[in-house]
Length: 602
Image 1 (tube, one colour):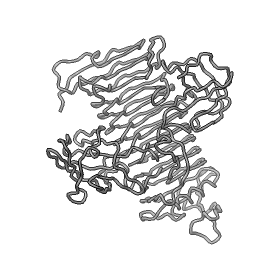
Image 2 (cartoon, rainbow, N blue to C red):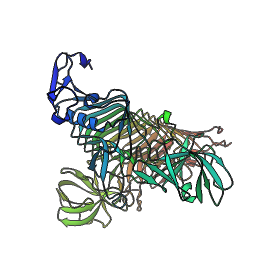
Image 3 (spheres, rainbow, N blue to C red):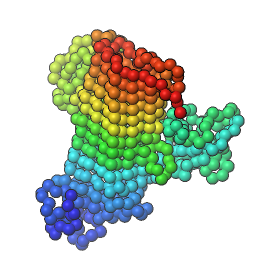
Image 4 (cartoon, one colour):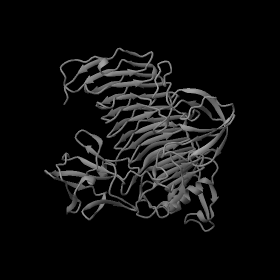
């Protein structure tokens, strides 16, 4: 891009009350390049609207003015943020209602209003250039929200929370009935009647999920909450606490205890009903609630993402729940050259949503319902979408139709008018999948670590390419292909998955295979598979003899070839590949050409 400050000609835009403190007539001068063509982007500078980098002032009002000014410009726009540190407080943040997939039920969080730091609504052709700035958010906020945008790029930006809603403390001493913990400087607390309460700006909690981080093995896992089991807590000195028990607590010196309340009332980033959105060189160093959520959006690219704690904070947590959660998206999803370290749930989850068929309303209309408590209120269907009718018991398709009309009855129920008549044998638990909103997925050259659950979950019928990634010590499966119509209602089947060139380092357990193809169908028939064509080739597995590499169920065209298996538990005898692979109700499976060797564990 040419240097715009040198341009003699300017473009003036009147912004009335949105103007920065510049000229007396209320006009903003937007410099254009001397050589710029008509399509060259207009530059909007955040500092022109009152933002002061590296100050403690609230950037929210200035950012809102700058975004509104950018929205008035036809054509490409760059919102340029001078390098520095910017603070966003909740007091003047945007308050707006949004339904978000996989977050909280009506009972958990009846108020769907989000507190939004930056909202881009209906923007087309915007580039938010961060220049490696750091945006710090106070209180509970959805940091960035894109609603109905097209051709938007977010780049060269870092975000973090001033006080993360996952608290941290390190075990520094332990005895027969107590342990001492040093509280991280970014975690605040009170002791009330001998019990510990975590506190932040506008929030507090005493109970909730906990997990442990072992810095020596660079791994985390879920556990019972020690705080809920303590008889009482005393403060030995500021930020040094002693927890007393009726038993001997099994804790490790140097381990970090991470605690949260479990309520996903905000998300890190929401992308809803957008298309062609790119995040490039973006660090999301803490996200409250679900992380980056994309829903009913097309063509999403995440390149060089840094979802890890900032090194200078010495924190160990970057995500309250999933890092990247894409529900009912379309087009192509690309995730590449990124780091996912320190979450409290899955790193990447790509899926659709089954809605249950509640009632036949006529010859070609049907009532359907969102079933999982934490997913509702989404658009779900648009006219011309293609849908499939799916047996709940077998998860197999028995009819295809097209939506011509959508009537929303409530946040959970819709009546769909269809192009063709309904099947006569709809089961009482059967579901519908919207197959139009199923993306192609490419996940390459990424690193996953300190994840207590799974690295990647994916259920989409379009091409999936998972290549050249490193998965380090996932406590559950590194990759899971599921689909279910009774629990999470996350659809649907896969038809073209390739897993190649990946390095799996001590992932899984006796309960969880490294790669799991596990549709939750109760009725199995080899002639009616749920999933098709899953190819697992040229990967390296470092594992122990007690961990299965692959468990697959109800899958046809399964290929597991040319993989290298290295046993790291120091066994004397080589194992054969059959000791590591288990298949159930699978047809046309090709399992050959794999090697197994031993290596002493260090």
